[in-house]
Length: 68
Image (cartoon, rainbow, N blue to C red; front, top):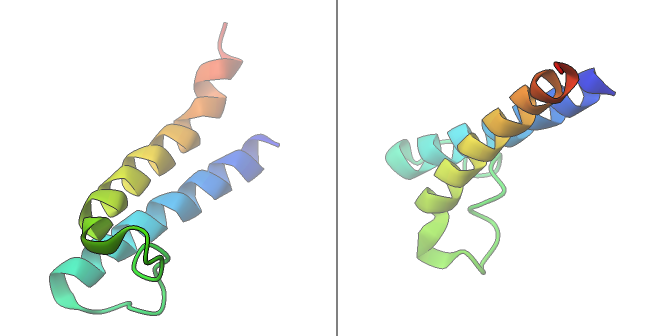
């Protein structure tokens, strides 16, 4: 289960990095989810940063919980 959570966090973080790359260069348009959700509108850059931070937090969470 730990590896699954870390993999999910990695995918979330990749979505955020892809969103930043798309905002800065215009590449990876079809690959990122934040650009396809109309609800976010002009806040796609902020959403991408939040996805990076959230993905990183999800990746380190199993290690932090496992140590007592």
